Length: 537
Image (tube, rainbow, N blue to C red):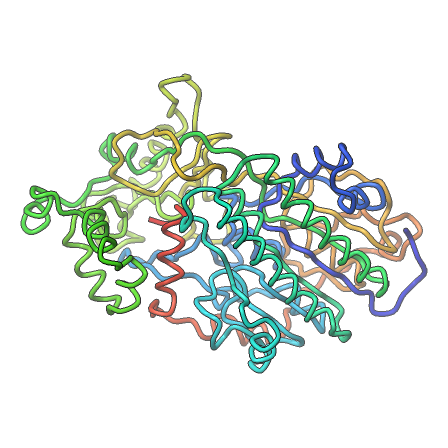
């Protein structure tokens, strides 16, 4: 589809959260996804390697900035302080330039981890991690009123843990969510003054966590395929290049693996002693689960508790009631290593944490011991290893405060955050499927070489490739490279040298960290829902 030299080339990035390469390949080969099939035949595409861990809060910032977590600064849903306190990560934690800070003007919508919207050359609607449709939901602020007027029942997200399985109600609500999201995309498509259009649909991730049935999934993917067809027509009319990417893949889950249970069993993690009030409550069967079960019987759920009581009071009471939460139930004065967030393991070293028992000189030894321990964990039913363990220093060399280890389950095994499970490995319950490392990437447009199969693309490569395709330099700090194979030989991007730049946009440097706060009250509802999803302790 190579074309002539164009001034101010445009790029449209369509993000699809959690779409795995194997499903797209299977259904395009079978002719069941017409427009995805066009991407295969008329464009360039292949699997896209995700981050480690392969999670939404780490991967989407990596896609949008072209750098790994040690540079963009987000390692999960919540940051961890030296005092073991927690704060929800937000877009304000990212000080490096986004793609839309360099390719402007831009329209950006529903990208996870972008709340609160910050000033930019263009328009933004924030995505996952937005606590409510209120302040910080859009830039400029008046865009919020336009959305509320045009799409009065617009939702930021849908939480599958609220449904009793893959019911008709769940599938109907999910379809409604995607339809409203499509309406937002169509509303923003009315804008003509853009060089970058970056829009994400998160529904595939929500659906697949609860449902891993090919008949149900294919119906959803065919609806996405219809949306893709509209986007392709829109892109062609504007002589733009389309990029389609997912942050990670997906696959079925059969068992849960409690890393903190393993660490506790081997003497690396200790729970708070059940003495005093905690012990008395435990003896009479009062736990956080039993309290919430009792409250739910009279119509009070966790969201209601958190919404109507000060967070400091909730935390204070929670530490006195026995349970299985790493935040409230671990004795950090004795614990030498613990899992925090989606697969991040920390050695409790005194040069990092305030109550830590590990001498900094002994921290490397403890790290090696824990890595060997977790690498050797096997399923007693099969004898097979269940965990992949990576060295945090190798994954994140630019940040001395990065996780010491990153732990992910092998196919079929999901790492969970609880610390008081009956056994280390248990059959999965409500979660039907979860993240895999292999997502998708496609490029399609006038400069793209038709029928190209990509084999070694990563999430870090999209930003450099989009910038080069638009005739702009790539930041020297980028961890990815330009996917030069996607461009047709006679196209301008194929014949032009890849330029680099060491200068970040001034407004990005000024905005980095702006609005950052240690207060978490605005995110209480988001945090409770993410905990329900199994993403947090």
